Amino acid sequence: MKERRKKPANGQGILFPDNELNPIRGEGGGEPLNVETVKKLLKDQGVCVTSEQSQEVLQFLHQLSNIIVSQFLQNEQDS
Image (cartoon, rainbow, N blue to C red; front, top):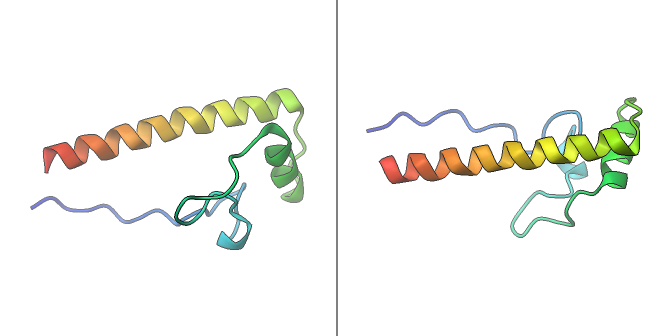
């Protein structure tokens, strides 16, 4: 039997410090993140970024989500 890893804190971190602010939580999620939303969420946390930097953050999150989904699917296939 495979050991399951501890689940990450859903939506916790600099973009979503608590689940109430997380626009992508829950079934079906909310509206997808966009450049302006990322800028606002980061600014609310005291981090000022440009539109270009916000776009880079979105690209990074997209790449990270692809990795996470791939790993999940691989783990499901291995079980």
